[in-house]
Length: 207
Image (tube, rainbow, N blue to C red; front, side, top):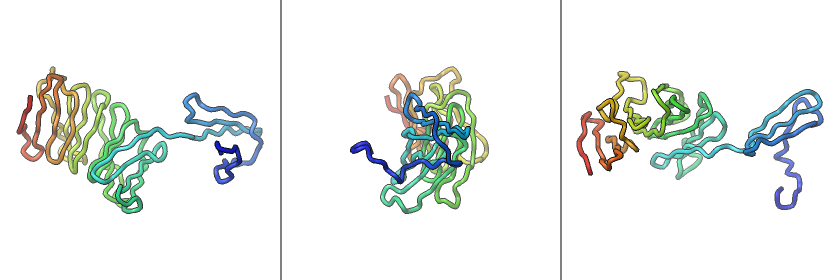
């Protein structure tokens, strides 16, 4: 205990096979504790997780292990709790009404997360460039990469991806999000545009 330096027995580390610890070392960021034993074993324990989370309505998704995400209802933590084992340690996450997106660099894995029974990977996408942000609704994902937005279905559908802006040499989008049935994105010149996911066309523009 950091208060009186007494031993906290329920937090002790059990070593198998049992042996005397000969060396111990913390990583510089304090996240990893490594030690070796006289039996020739080297152990490495994770002492701290990075804070990685996302929300959608009343649901919260957060990192509970290097490759595990937990999703709970904010109003009742024990109701419809979903645990998902990810394909790798994620660098970013996004949560939709029924899907979870996790990824690193230019790849994203999409998981269904409506309940524990249906929790599984439903799609994997690789993009040209590092992902800056992700937003989801019930069926679509929008991904911001290098000033452009890539819009596609979350689950494997027709494979069609719509890219904004439509001009190939235009990379002026600074942020994007899906709100209900609309994709909303902003340009560096101050323009805010609404794209209808139902009609498949832009319906409003603000300057």
